Amino acid sequence: MLKIYLYSLTSVFLISLVSFVGIFTLALGDKKLKKILLYLVGFSTGALFGGAFLHLLPEAVEKYGFTPLLSFYVILGILFSFVAEKFISWRHCHIPTSKEHPHPFAYMNLFGDGVHNFIDGLIIGAAFLTDISLGIATSVAIILHEIPQEIGDFGVLIHGGFSKKKALLFNFLTALTAVLGTFFALILGGYIDNLTLFLVPFAAGGFIYIAGSDLIPELHKEYSPKKSLIQFFSILAGVGVMALMLILE
Image (tube, rainbow, N blue to C red; front, side, top):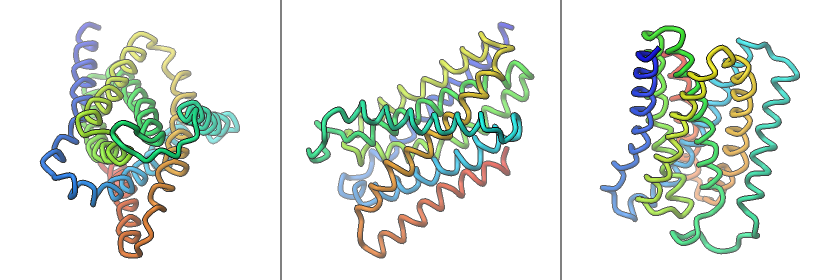
């Protein structure tokens, strides 16, 4: 059992370090970064939709069936995200986005990423409990899944008013929820099925809400036909990467 704990926690911590992939954008000047931010937001939008509709929901449906209870958990995830955003936006925001005043959608993205990473941790822990080789293979698949998403998430935070250093720090802190998820999986053991029955569709609902309610409206602020077309393809790219992960898994 000690070996399983060691492998699981080492794997999930390495995955958490992927959140620092945004550091490669630090070499870009502010002007260059600003030009690509909305495309990163578009990429993250596609990745969230792809994660919800190509990974989380099919996994839940395959394991538990497409039941009214599963649909209820998806709706609950959407409603919870709505309430969370209302709480974050406790004052009506007309203040321009800045480093001193990040906008709520950036915090909503952090919230969604934290839930997502927690579930990744649960999946990793459950895989290692089943078989160490399965746990390693699952960890590799999640790392490949995380790299493009973390780049997109970093872009969302910068667009929302975070400084580069603050975006990296907060991205890493939300990534650590994966470690918490792995601990839950290892400790709860036999109860993990009941937990994922709720968390997987709940997370899918959160992904759908954040992508549709928070990120897409940001993309609509750009009216240039050429840039809008690039945004569209950046969304497709995000979905495409998630679709590619189905093959790699």
